[in-house]
Image 1 (cartoon, protein in one colour):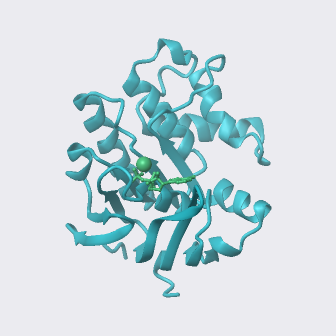
Image 2: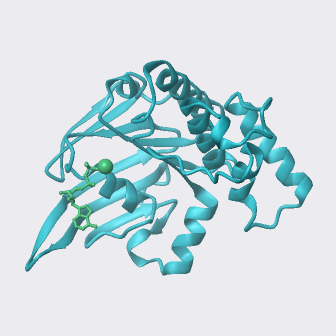
Length: 237
Ligand code: ADP
Ligand code: MG
């Protein structure tokens, strides 16, 4: 593995059982990502975007091939090791942001830290920093039912970012947002990408999302159709 590659996918194939036979969702994918990329997988529904993000996020493993994430091969991690990788290094944002309704904004973000050895004081600082990043530091005590869709997705971003993961995976994060809110959260994510050098990987259908990307990987029928570099990553010295 080249040490510059935070993610290195080699000959990854993923098959699912399909009745008597098998369905090939990913067909011999080869790809690498460097630290700090801001990239999206696009392609029609069923092209394999979510399957690929799930493998990179170590929520699923390849049938064949290797997927090295932070130097660890997803295919060979046991349950505990993959949980550890996710816990420390990977944040997730989904289309449905799944906030816990009885908890406040603050508590929803703090939740991501509770299984770790932070003191209450450390957690408070980390949560308030994360809420500050997404522009919600003034409403930590609100309940999710009082938030707009855009604010709800911002809480989900704060929850995913609070541990400062190296990799942030966002599967259709703007699907339930209007245009204004979609642009708002994309600007926020791009800024976090720049400031913290977090590697962002999206799956999307949304043209608004594509407009922010430095790189777009086009998938079709589980294969890479095109690997489009739009902006070369600025190398921070
Ligand atoms: P996308 O996110 O691009 O819409 P997916 O990665 O979700 O596509 O799915 C790719 C293909 O794999 C689809 O045809 C889907 O039905 C199939 N697939 C995904 N997950 C499973 C699963 N757990 N079992 C069986 N088939 C699956
Ligand atoms: Mg999908």
